[in-house]
Length: 170
Ligand code: S3P
Image 1 (cartoon, rainbow, N blue to C red):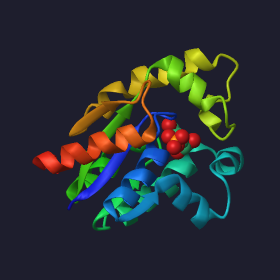
Image 2: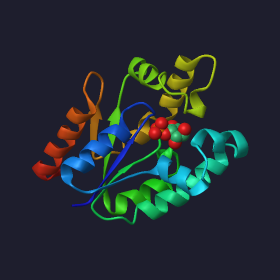
Image 3: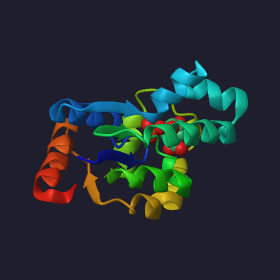
């Protein structure tokens, strides 16, 4: 099996779906944000606050190059991984790309629970989400499969991906 790479905006459920998917498939799971945090020994929020977004993007790109070489692994990515074409090129080499999507309302609701997303720490969160989404929507469309996660659980999303794999999509 190829790697399964989950891309998508913040709050679309990449990490929880990825974890469940890996356990259902009996394969390894890796999350690029988590790996960046382990390597930097700092949270994503701290990296942004202390060194800024470009530094985070450089750490993220290095982690992507590393995890893209895995085999039989579910790779969950940070929402901005699609911004650097070389990230997607590396991930695609051994992976099928699955994009998780969600409406602005769903994203706002899911991301309101945890304050770990520096890009959304703005006064007008709705406007911020809409602006980022309009910059990125086309990039998320590069996926081999797109799943709307509005109103479904991570387990249901994982099952949709498993059906896709069984039908030979991967
Ligand atoms: C980001 C998404 C975050 C994290 C960082 C930047 C983005 O990951 O990588 O805060 O640019 O969309 P999640 O999508 O897992 O929240």
